[in-house]
Length: 66
Image (tube, rainbow, N blue to C red; front, side, top):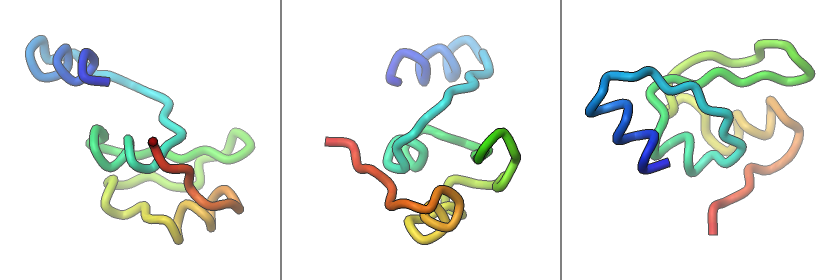
């Protein structure tokens, strides 16, 4: 993730990344798109998706990074 962040900031390259950990979304993402069964169910800022919203979208608690 650090290398992708570096490429984004230094080279101005847009990075599209599939993240399944809410902690990483909050740390690295500028925008969030959440899909469930191929359908767009959320689009917004990282601060707008919390544990409650994650559970509404996916029906389970968010996993945490070690």
